[in-house]
Image 1 (tube, one colour):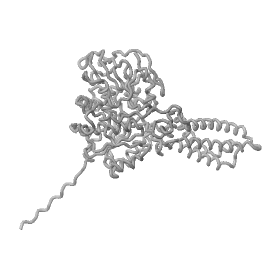
Image 2 (cartoon, one colour):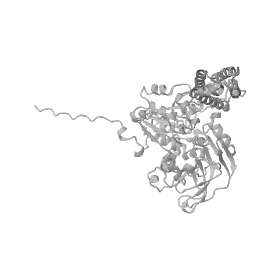
Image 3 (tube, each protein chain N blue to C red):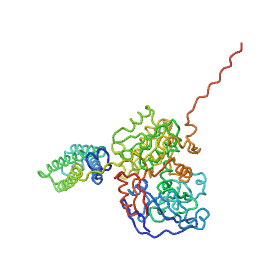
Image 4 (tube, each protein chain N blue to C red):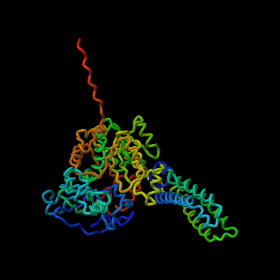
Length: 390
Length: 191
């Protein structure tokens, strides 16, 4: 089959690789009908996340049709089922899965010992996302082997196009969880840094959950326009001071809820701290660029909440913990517990409350995938979300 | 430039590679400046320029300022031209070390060759950044109709208020708005 394969920093190719096979009784194989490039794939493309090996298949936003089912998954899946595959691989049986904390499933990361060394404990296995999370082949391919498939799937009905359903795999529940963990009240101002795909979904989630005011922060005109279309007030970091503008919009009190939908590769260039991060990162003294975290901690209203769906990978420097402690801020973060939210979100799509396909700007073939990584990374051609049709 | 902002559109630049080169030169400036400030004596000794330690450290300050300018500015072009001017100053200063009986002339020659190499990169980068792109950027995509809400934003606002936030995702009780309980009223004496 054809698949997008990681070969090194900014080197992704469309290669021919062996077809996946059932390896465990709980496995299933799906024929991929649609998959997408995620913003967090760019951390692998740019090689900011450790643990990739040449030959790894990319991709963790995938849906398709079941074509083969292992013996122990047959009670839950059958050939022909239409499924969205969550990016987190879950067993559904461990203590964390039973609590709904699927992204920290205790069993599915087959390299859990490596993750435990890096993070203190294992986290769930993920598709196509480094050997720290199991080294599972990803779904930017014609076929995907789904481990623990009896639990790791979202059945979806026929009659709704892939484009409306695909993002149940990651960005829609990720944006939703980012908003939910803010426990949004009708009086809240919610500020969201980053208007990429997750930021866009977070804006829509905050609107659906009834925030008084949603403010979106970015520098790319097309992304800001899309954020505004979704009901947000926008701040262009190239034109305005984020902190001054947020204070203006909140009568000097700051937003109650701040969401970091940017993560480790913040691109602010006109601030002292972002230069500091660039220099430290270039000299391998820091792994991530946490400009957004610093800004959020500074501007957030006392007793407010910082919600962090943006991906961070390692060691962060100069985090103003004094502000966090003295203002009594709550920090909520984590990979998304996808299956915890998807029944509810699928219902909202079916009822027409939201149509997540609004975010798609490019649809390409698998062969065009490697070029689209660069277009997406450089925000060229108004690129916000790339869907791949194998 | 890295992103197609209004500013980069005005200049017609969409050259990521040159932008990356500019940022690299900024980092190089800072690294060189730190070296010049940290070890002016060693550099002066290696170049046979004893007594010029203060000048070398001063050039280090200039390098760091230029590097910060490149990394911090929205448009690094004038700062890269600043590097070109700095290169000329460096070459002129090094040329003075070629005069007389300087026993370290060979090192000075190597240093000048290195500065010339950096100058070539600086000039290339500055010229490319200054040039109008021969290919005008495509117009901005219009996403102003992409609300994602089939029934419109107003209808969508609060549409998920039926959602019950799970208890483990709720704001901690201690941080919820707190109202001081009313003080018990003293009973009024009955007349």
